[in-house]
Image (cartoon, rainbow, N blue to C red; front, side, top):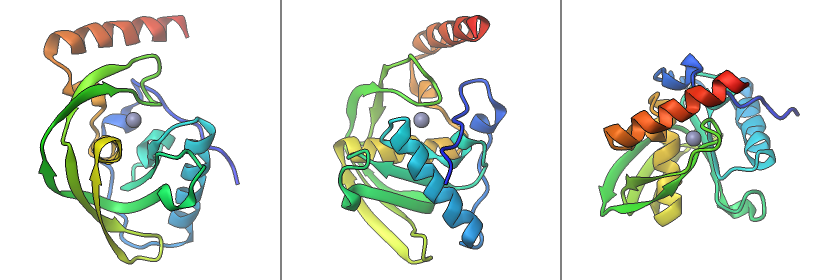
Length: 168
Ligand SMILES: [Zn+2]
């Protein structure tokens, strides 16, 4: 099973709203499996399908980065049902390398989605886990975390990213 290529800032797949998964078939299960491998190899604590060039609503989150199987979450068609409170802290993204900026996120959320067997999953998450789910769900809605910055910060970050791309 291969580790997939993670696309970065500037790739149009990252700003497109991903399509819902209508049927959880072998193709989706293989995608999810490869996404988990890719997230662990990166290493990262979350990944969304658009980051591996697949515009589908599939996310993976694992704060333990492969250490604890019970911390691995794979959600199909995830959505946030409830948000509570606010935390303002540093965030980064495998698709926006070299940038870490403070972003506001809810302190607690309830998230719903399907697992790979098509069963409905309901999760309550707080802190970093809530942040990771929000970050990945933003991805499938075509939104990068830097869009949450103030206009000035965002302009500075985009300038830095354009410079990085010129050097690539
Ligand atoms: Zn990201």
